[in-house]
Image (cartoon, rainbow, N blue to C red; front, side, top):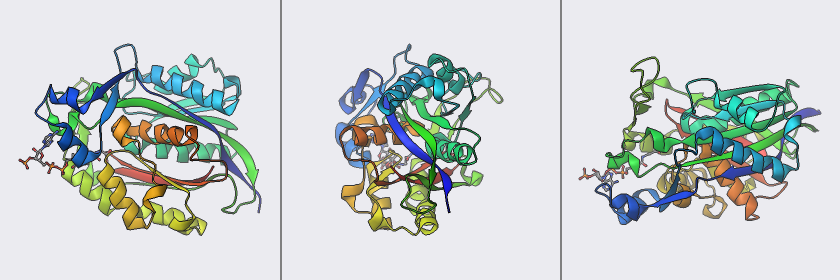
Length: 325
Ligand code: UT7
């Protein structure tokens, strides 16, 4: 049975110009390169300068994605930006990206599911495209998490970085089976009982300030490894595929140990896992599109490959999407 699919036309990313190494951080807080590498796999992260706001990073990533897709910005009729670090409380970062690209048609909005934001945004854009509500979408993950960090707190400030990535998705007819190109299935979850395990202690409706990121790291770790694999199993079930059919597993890049434990639990071979956490740290909603772009640029992800994206974030929120590239 033919049906519309959201097919990837291109991806792109952008990283702030300043790189901060573990050694740089060890000069500011009581930590070490060895501790950070051993517990997280992170070696460095990019940190935005004051002029590099979330929308600035998002516009550059989107421009790179459009260029790689060979698509003119004027033909985009949906911009979805996943971010928890908007330039302003409102208007949305998506409208700033839209204006930065010179787009005047269609809809633009932000979507906030913290580190799961990009998976939520792909799933949402897919619904617009496959129902005919839009024809070409720009899905952006853009973050400046450095602005939310308590730089005195060594348990969190070593983990995060800034950046942006984007995908251009286009509605195209498919056959309705797992050989189709495009987003084959997506599965989203949330369980707000865990909202106090990873949060920001401020906001416009409570303190009137931006607040700082707080995290019970061990609990996030336990939940990430123990529970979020459900959405990946659902994606395999929904499409009749298995871990062996996957070409690439591109999870949210929070911690190398979480990623490898999840891959092992799911029977996904380590060589199919795309890892960028060593270079980027945890860039929240930007981490998956940054990793996708890295693997496209170096020739690993190719047209026709089966790619699983998966993430967990504050809330908790989590999700997966299975994409035939
Ligand atoms: O996108 C989702 C967002 N978050 C995550 O995915 C994070 C999930 N959690 C984690 O990745 C890990 O829990 C961490 C990397 C945050 C921490 O690793 P851990 O193995 O759970 O370490 P821990 O919290 O049990 O801390 C072990 C020790 C503690 O010292 P004591 O109490 O054993 O003396 C910490 O105080 O390491 C200490 N420690 C540090 N030492 C050096 C904590 N942070 C640091 C640090 N440098 N930066």
